[in-house]
Image (cartoon, rainbow, N blue to C red; front, side):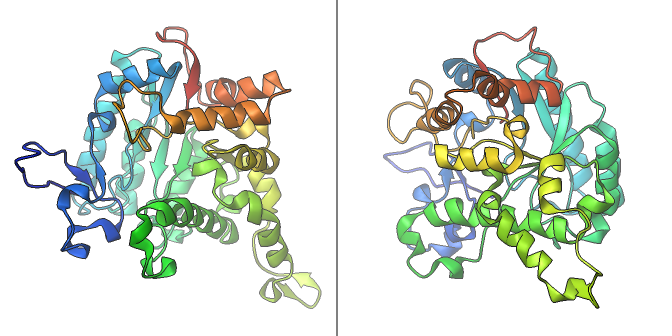
Length: 360
């Protein structure tokens, strides 16, 4: 949600604040200065010229745009389709007006009835610059493994669109203990977000989403979250789960192995912030299923002007690719540009600017 701090003598026109986490809300911090809650909502979130400037500074030729979390999850059911159409039309217009620089992942009204979600998807899925959709992990409130979402998965399964699964809700504040606020967003963003994504994806696999919709293609945020470390353990737990076996026969659980799904249905965004995480991502899905991402506009420079400074968050993710693929030029090119260009059908021939392609 947005919070608008009151003007003060020192800051007569304070920036709106983006309240990402419940622990950031003014109601949860009655004694805090409202201008310090959440994150400042700078023009980097919405200004096309600012985004292009960022891309040029970091040698990014083409970007795939999307709404940031929480997307449209908070809207009343009746309002969702209207705002989806408005936002997707605007993203298409921005892409058309900047040839070769932008494509986009569309927004779906997941707070609305599933038929409205499917109809909205049909309305923009064939747009010239749409290459996918972005979803949170809650679905319509019961998770992405909710059988009620099968019509949506069926429509995505039959399309050429990528489904970007991104966290927002994290874990309950109680998990992080009473001293969580002393470290700001560190625990929720580093651990809460990644475990949220991991749990959502494993639930989809366990409940047979990838069995029923075998052509579905999903992109997991943050280099696959914790899947690289936990995939073997999850598969072993399934193999030894007594509920899935009876009289020496397999009677339940997913039909396709986790490894098969990871190698055939899953893409990762490469936002690992380190060589170890990226190396794990390559081992998990292969270097031909990773697309480099900028994580823009999150994690701007804390000091200096974000328009003028190089963003350390971008440099860190780029260095991870260079370190892991130091002896593999083709693999490096695939992650930085080729995989996205080929799978997302990006025409960069008319793009201005220089350098590599960013997934987000």
